[in-house]
Image (tube, rainbow, N blue to C red; front, side, top):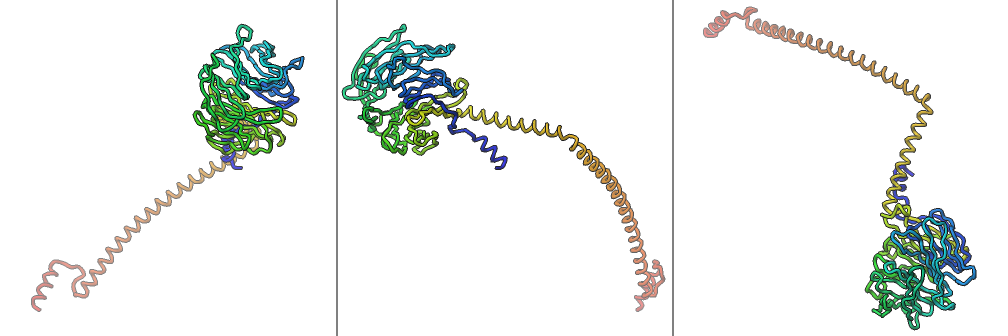
Length: 469
């Protein structure tokens, strides 16, 4: 590869691609849910092994494992880091389980581990928690159950208070989302694709919206579906369970775009909005995470797990803003958890563009500096060899310059002599011309029988003779 090609490739290195960063291992069952804390330093994961694991993303190590000693939790079905105070002085982790329990753990920034704050059975033991949402403005929780129960809770003074409870008839609330700055609650219903909007204060029904893509899959005793919402654009991403994910825009019933992914089995796959909704990451049933630009249906990049048989049902993204680049080391991060095989979590990173440019520039500057140092060191080490050569060349050049000076002086002398000779030649020519002119005059006088020198009296005589004739 040429130097210019190498520099161009180096400049474009990692500019717009996610690259593999590492592997997190420790779950003994399928990984169901993933969530980052506020500053991106910690990742929480929950699975069918009834454990919540805390990971240090930068060092790729497990920090803590949370589990119920009595085994009452069941599988971890939903999980979310939340913020109670501003600026945040602690990490709060809330998660729901397959046996209807909501648990809250807290870790101060100076503490080493999370400690349990409370654990509450909000639903019956056979009614799993399907959805969890948090409203940071009014500090309220919305939770939904497998059998259609909806509850609004508030955490205050170390206690949980139930504000209201309602039920969605003959439907499963797969996802919940606070909207309108916490004043309303959107409920995403499985099977029908119906979105119900309720007043968050009174639970009164405000309106509905029908999507053409059902949020559904039926796996025997487990019914699941997947839906993601983009806070930046208001778009909705739904796993259509047929050929990929459908993108729904606000105030539109039908999908605006379909991101097609090959599938061989009817398994739920997670999909998330990345980078402010500009990028979409989608799981699969064959060990791939597919990256799309939100405005295009063509695959932009494939993130490959180690096993092609891996089922990717959990995908999460760390949303990094440029002004927060120093806090999270300037990277967008995607994590993907598998539900088969070794149930691993893979980590992928991509620099924020400004950070990527800074890194490329620093790398190029470092290479230039390293080359300069290497060259200087090489010259110092080999100085005995090349200094004598340079001195010899200098002497030869000096001698050649001196010789050229002598030659130039000789040429000047030759030129002066030539000019003198030419002047003498010119003088000789004028003498010869004068001689020839005189010879020519004498010949004319002999032909006319005149004296050698022509005098005025001679001219008078010639004139008289011509008159007599």
